[in-house]
Image (cartoon, rainbow, N blue to C red; front, side, top):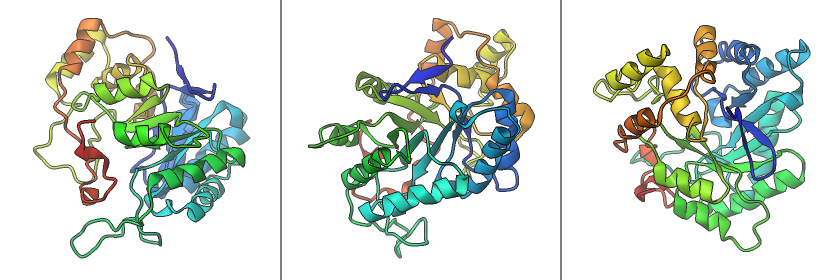
Length: 316
């Protein structure tokens, strides 16, 4: 079973990574160390998670103790929305690298297509509680991202939360130097994203699924929201394979050639989430799980809904 996906740069991106969104400082360094010890080689982070120093500490500890070399790891970060102005992109990347104490990133993503007003506030909101735009267009940010590749700060660049029209805008940009290598999107059985995944794959863009378990620990969860990990139909498939629901949900992505980045800070769960290469879901089971789609988003980013570049107002 392929344990990596080939990027349009020729690089191999491990198909399973450790997610670090909502992993608290003080816990995330240990989580990263446990993941690398368990065999993970792909660590997904972002400036906005505000824990990159600890993520770097975990990576560097395992490099220092000889478990891995830097080139064995695939480290991902993301440009936050308040740094979309061309003059701010490089300093944002350099801040991430200095926090991580690394010389380069394997993949750097534009976290959202929306630019927010620059400044210390990560979510600048107006009096109506809606995001304040910086007036930029993501094509400007993309040109600055391309410069990071040429400067050797990042090996590959990509996008996150972009819809088909927004991806096309990049692909059709006059003078485009580098195509996006990856689009990281929310994806799980309640949001199967078939059309967007098929489109990305048709364009040579790999897809990473964030919240692959349905993000049960998202801060805005409501009691009546659907819970994937407790879904009896998933549990039934898991029992049949003597696996956990989480393992089935991760395996579902892998069999679609979609990279998955489940987040955990519990060493036992981190290990368990990696034990997904020793079983196969049947075509029937894959069909069943795809049938759970209800276009339900755990992360609708609702305060950006009036932003000119809000990505979720189109079908896909």
